[in-house]
Image (cartoon, rainbow, N blue to C red):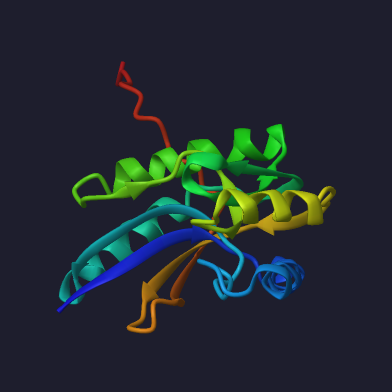
Length: 185
């Protein structure tokens, strides 16, 4: 059976503060897309037969072992007006750490048909009307959240259209060895 999966940066430390923001927005504009989604930064999404997930997990485990933990700082709100998305943005240092990891994961999973994200952000709301985007931008003006980015998470989409975590892949701080042609003599 085909299932939809996503690979994300995820930290329990930001789930509750972001949930409060989403709940507050929901109290002002009622239900909206992603109002019940736990805080995360999407790396990619794909749909495959569930029998094919183990090789994906093996690839994610191997690549995660090469990454070193770092702090992510979420320090501003912004939007993608054309998509109706309102989100928390990362600072420049965090972006410089996240983007290369995202690209390596995209490359590692290139055999899959990926919906890729290469602009790290944490969504508050998606597919908001222009009016609701304006409300969100007036409600939320300053933010300062941080979390230790020390793993990537694989999530599965359930029939009720919510993702749930099915596996985590901790960063192993073991950079890949560059192959160097040596000389024996």
